[in-house]
Image (cartoon, rainbow, N blue to C red; front, top):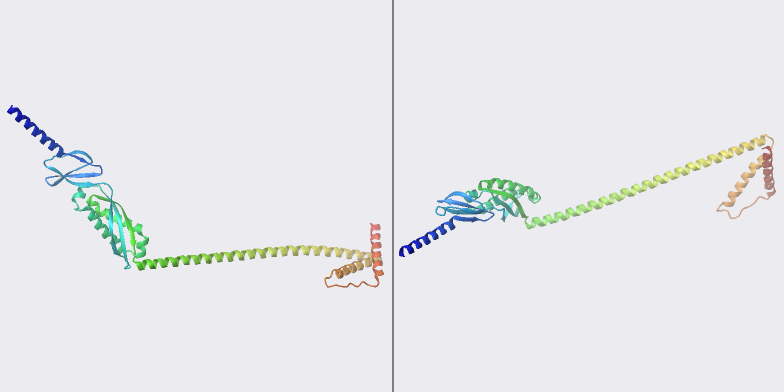
Length: 308
C-alpha cells in the first residue's frame, strides 16, 4: 500500500509539472499585436496573432508590439519662420509598425523617438518659409514632413502614413495686423465692385442714348425722304398744271389764266384764315371778280370735258 501511495503521488506531481509547463509554453497573441520571443536574451522569432507554442524553459516574450495604425499627438512648440515671426505649431502623426522586431530592437522608445523627430522636422520645414507661406502652404509642409519622416523611420520598421499640422498660431499683433489687412482687402474689393457697377451703368446709359439718337436720326431721315417725295409729286403736279394752263393759253383760252389765279387766290385766303395770329380777316370789296373767276374755272373745266 505504501508503494502504491508513493506511485500515485509521483503521478500527481508529474501531472502538475506537465500542466505548468504546457500553460507556460502556450501563448495566445491577440489580433493587432505581434510578440517577439527571446531565447537567452536574444531575439529569436515573432509570434503572429493566434494560438502559439514556445519553449517555456529557454524562451520568453520580449516585447508586445501593437501593429495597428496609431495616432501620435505632437505637442505644441514655438517655431521661428524665415522672416523671424514666432508661431506656435502642433500636429498629429499617423504611423503603423510593419516589422515588430525592428520596432522593438532598433529603437528604445518608438513613440518618444517619433515625437522628437517630428518636432525637429517641423522646425526645419517652417524655418525655411515666410509667415505667409507657412499659413498658406500647409499641404506642402505636410507632404514634406511625410516624405522625410517616412524615410527616417524606415530602419525602425515603421511606416508613416500621414502627417498633419493641427494648428499654426501667429502672435497676437500679427493676428491683429492680418485682421486689419483682411478688412482693407474686403473694402477694396467692395469699392472695385461699386466702381465696376457705376462703369457698367454709364456704359449702358451711353449705349441707350446712342441707340435712341440713331433711331431718332433714322426717323428724321425717313420723314425727310417722305417729305422730299411729297414735294416732288407736288412739284410734278404743279408743273403739269402749269403746262396745261400754258397750252390752254396758247390755244387762245384766256380762262385758263383765271383758273390758275383763282387757285392761288383761294390758297392765300385759306392760309390767312388759318393763321393763329389773325383775329380779323378782310375780304376784298370786289368779291364779284372772284365769283366770275370761279365761273371761268367751271367753264374751263367744261371745255376740257367736251374735248375729251
